[in-house]
Length: 167
Image 1 (cartoon, rainbow, N blue to C red):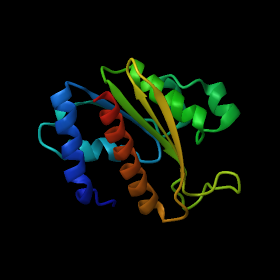
Image 2: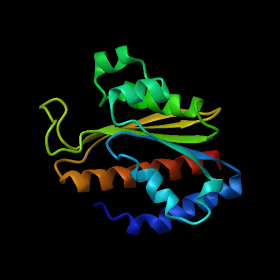
Image 3: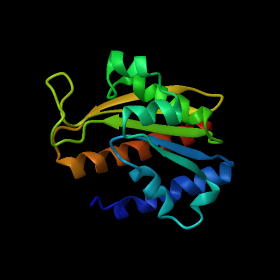
């Protein structure tokens, strides 16, 4: 089990900043399996900021829940920049959120290839009436729990940066 408790103070500060700005957050998660939303909901009162979390672990869930085109997944693979971007855009369009972070990656221990190794994770941040950014991280083989925790930390940093840009 992944211990999220060291990240609670940062998540609390993020939620407080979003609350002051009147902003809502949503997540679209694959390899993290809902850990980002779980971290945010560890904080009492998070329901006034966290609009919803989409756990779209399967390709079908990505298509059905947040509208990722199946051809996009077929062409690029679920772990790719285009899919991470489509996940963020889809979650933004299916929520009341102002900021959406998406994550899709290979947590291992299996599933990696030379081109897409274990530890490869794609992130996207979509801002309503704003920009859409992407980040690729290659964490290496930190073990499944390590990759998932590093992904949650990175997603938190993206949300923090998104809040700072919205000012």
